[in-house]
Amino acid sequence: MNSAPRLVLFTRDDPATSTGGVETFCTRLLELFPGSALVAYGGAAGKRRHLADEARDAWIARRELARTVAALHPAAIVANGAAAWALRSSERPLITVLHGTYGGFGRAIAPFTPRRAFVARTYGAFLEKRAARHSDAVVAVSASVAAQARDLYGVRGRLAVIENSGPASEPTRPTRAAARARLRVSGDEQLLLFVGRGESTKGFDALLELAARRPDWSLAAAGVAADRPLPANVRALGVLRPDPLRDWQAAADLIVLPTCYEGCSYALIEALAADRPIVTTATGCFPEAGRQPYGMVLAPASGPGDAAFAARLERAIAELLAAPHDFAPRGATEERFSFARFAEEWRALIDEVAVRFPAPRVAAGAGTGEPATASAAELRDGR
View 1 (cartoon, rainbow, N blue to C red):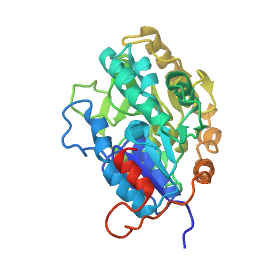
View 2 (view 1 turned 30 degrees about the vertical axis):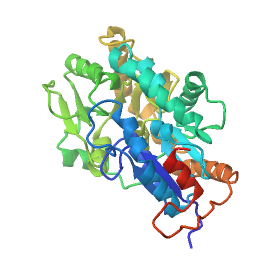
View 3 (view 1 turned 180 degrees about the vertical axis):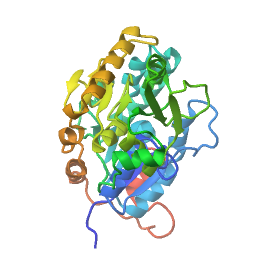
View 4 (view 1 turned 135 degrees about the vertical axis):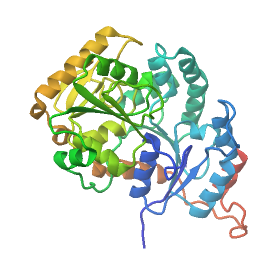
């Protein structure tokens, strides 16, 4: 009999149909706590028509969450980001996970997209602040996100930093030669891999400028659709499944993500696990600029068209390409981003919060199809 605690995850997008950092995190927790359940609330209010629909989706999905909690009797409910904004205290501990903060994100992207930044700093930050206030514990995926939770949201209760990790079992990775042969990339081609959305806030505009300045470098962009004119040395790969992505990671000389904001990027964690050096910016779990054992970390761009940043990015990539054997990405970070460390810290947190909550009371109506615990009823009614 499996005695491991079970969780209910409350999140916007189902990892079975969506890709992204939050969805990868959900997959890791489901691997760690077998028998757990996931309630994805995206679309619960119907087709999205305006910005407020995400909050409305979470509100409406409380009934499904209540039914799932009643059926599973979990050790805890884990809600991603603003998901818990409409929930109240219940007999099951509630943990809110901040994969970043809307407040911090809004400040970081303000020079690039002011309107989006304003919405993040106001509407998004309000939802997250409310979610954190209702939680028995808050998890931040990096020390910088924890600082934002304290400074911007006033979180003063239980605040844990648990960085993300690789998968439970290391996948088989191709050699550089085998991957390049499959992808038809020549052995002497200098190949940079970008993994992220094709947006200025992720630094994709800076990479397009870099590609124009350095036609001798090739850039492959995973997560970017081929829906716009691109320089001849840029390949838009679209959203990749894990096996093709591992091929591109193995084929690349380095992974570059000159983003203006991150929490704890899975794209970079996976690059390091593939033993590929990274060139990124000082944000999230890599807050210190400078040359590192795993790659190069730069101060972020000050805004669109930052010529000084573009020059620093080019120099950093050139320095790394000139001496790739000076870096040891996997060796320098393997323990830090291991699944074993992630598992130990999450199990300890679940044990800590669960011990403060008695076993759920089973109501007389159990088995009748109605919510069977007091916590389910409280969730359903928003008490």
